[in-house]
Length: 497
Image (cartoon, rainbow, N blue to C red):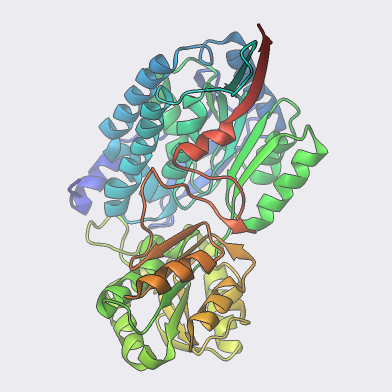
């Protein structure tokens, strides 16, 4: 999609009627308490809307609506082909409203408008469409049985799904959950982050327009410690899916155990290693990918290539190439179509990122470039992407997820050392390997404890590739046919003939 000039987006904003209410049982409604919170844009500080601050009372209403819709069979009992038609219409409506959704996404969480329009919204629509297209092509099984018996293995929708999604890719992450959850016949309560609720609230109405029955998709904006906790503890929520921090993911597992042992599927933090061997086929491409891997989406990416592992023999030549490549990633007003680095989501995240930069300095790493707040005159929340050299894997900036554009450069001397450093992390979400040696590529990829490994690229794959992590990066998988495992129960039916 071609991105219009900033003036176009400002004019579009003037005509927006931003909805901030919850969406329950097919209609917008205020929170039971009447409480709201302000939604302020990190782009330039403008006030966007007052958002319903939902709590346990709203969770009760939404879960009841979801349960009624599920038990009635109004969606769950529809033929897969019919559910497919509705979801494809939903995907079409996302694209038909792409400019509005992109503007909401950018103003809400700060990402460049060019990315919202050309990446986030199309990817969200594609997630809905891909799952819709898949659902009537998935078959159940017939077990190998004696001739006087018949064994069936079938999938059933799990029931009521609560989906808690993050603020960095608000609509895309929501659709990664909604696509398979709705396609398999479940009813869903979507809890967007309080930092970026606008697109989730908006698409609820689009889903109804597409033909989704009332109560099948409900949206509850609010805080994690109120409505998020209520959903996680609710005895009538069958499955909880989450993308966010490892700290919260662990707490959600506790809540599941304290309540009804609901299924919990978690995509959590990452500290992904990007390993560049001396025989990388294209060092310039590797340098540009390393810059993109840490600066794209302001570094607010769970798979950000935040640890750059460089073989010592090419370090002196390669690092300046990375520094030069990162200079092209300059922060700018997020509504400017030429901007590549937008605003961080809020001042809290800015303080976190700047705090880690100070910690890197204090621990003895060398700040090579960037690391300062910029564009303060815009009233926005912008930081210049940073590179630290001389980092050891024991430093905080190498071990903890920063969720900002801060790159740690670590030197290694052998493949074995690179693998050991890469795996020396509580996380295992993603990794990349750059080499011309096919055996080294395979052996290193196999040895890396990560859910996704890319070779001679960073962040490859599409909807056909499962996404998720090892270790404290979570469990379960988004995307691909494997995602359906999270939203269905397997049933064995054994018939004596």
